[in-house]
Amino acid sequence: MSDPPPPRIPLRKAELQTLASLADSTTLRSELLLSDYFHGRISLSPPLLSRICELYASGTIFSEYIENNFDIGSLSEDTALEVPQKHIKTMAKIVLSISECNVYLSSNNINVDKSSDV
Image (cartoon, rainbow, N blue to C red):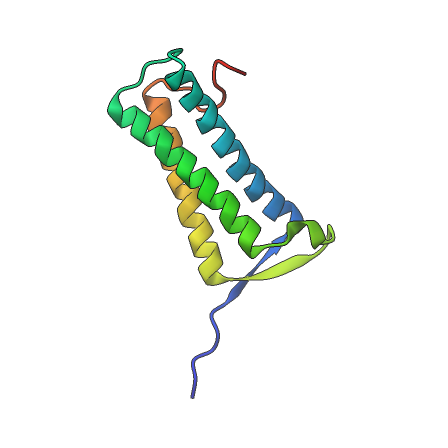
């Protein structure tokens, strides 16, 4: 007897678009903070710079993961994809990483909502 397949989680187009938006905005915000740092508009300690780089990496990885695994543009608004649990776990880990970086940066008075460029 084989084990039953792992459960699948339904995700609708709007939910996938929200995740894609989170990935894109995370990448953009971290790019703007890095630009401010490299142009001398803000100074950062090595741990803060490292966290911003981690935030950038997480946003970029998340964007690529979504693009490589889901064709959001081809979905109708009412379509729900049955997503394997392993994809949900991977996405949850990335979102958690983004959240932890945002909390750390916010607790160190780094505005993760926008850069001074915006």
